[in-house]
Amino acid sequence: MSRWPSNPRGRLQQAAMELFTEHGYDQTTVAGIAERAGLTERTFFRHFSDKREVLFFGGEQLEAMMVAALRSAPPEATPLGAIEAALSAVTEFFDERHPLSQARQVIIDAHPELQEREGAKMDRIAGALTEALRARGVPDPDARLTADAGIAVFRSAFAQWVRSDVGDMSACIEECLATLEKVIEQGR
Image 1: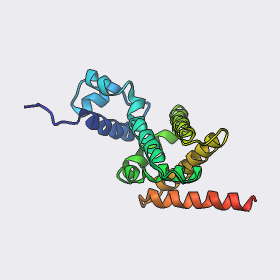
Image 2: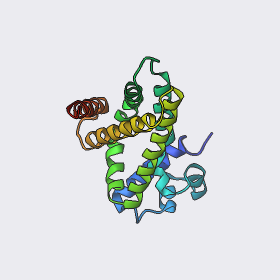
Image 3: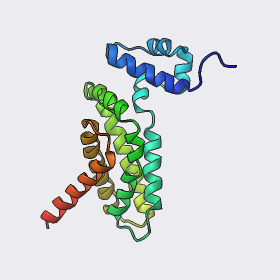
Image 4: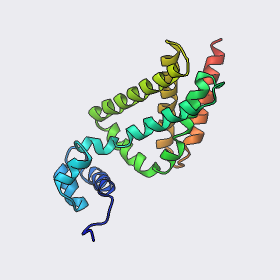
C-alpha cells in the first residue's frame, strides 16, 4: 500500500497554487512546493520541468481538444463554424476549473514572463488550428486568419469568464462570437 494518496501531479499543483497565493510566485520554490505536497523535489521534476509549468500544464490537452473538435465539425461547416466547434468543445474543461483559473490568472497578470508564456501557448494553439483548417481544405491566408480570429475570440471570452463570478465559459464564447460577427457585418 502506498504511503501517500495517489495523484502526485494534482497534489503538486494544489501545493504550488497555495504557495503562489500565500507567498507570491517569485518567493515560491520547487523545494517548498514539493514539501507542501509531501513529495520530493525529484517527484516534482518527474511531473514538471519548473514551477512555471505548474501554471501551464494542460495546454496540450486544451490544444488537442480544440483540434479534435475542429476536425469533427461537419464537412459543410464554414471555417468560422469549425472554429466555433473547437471553442465550444472546451467550455466544460474551463467551467470545472473556474476558481483555479481565477487564481492562476492573478498570478499570470502579475508577471510579464508568464504573460509571454501564455501568449506563446495561444500562438501554438492557433498554429494547430490553422493546420487543422488547412487539412479541411481551407487555403492560406484564410486558414491562419480564421484560426487567429478564433484565438482572439477565445482570449476575449476567457478574460470575461475568468473575471466573472459565474463560471459559464460557453456564454462568454457565444457572446464574443456574436460580437465578432456583428463587427464583420458592420464593416461590409
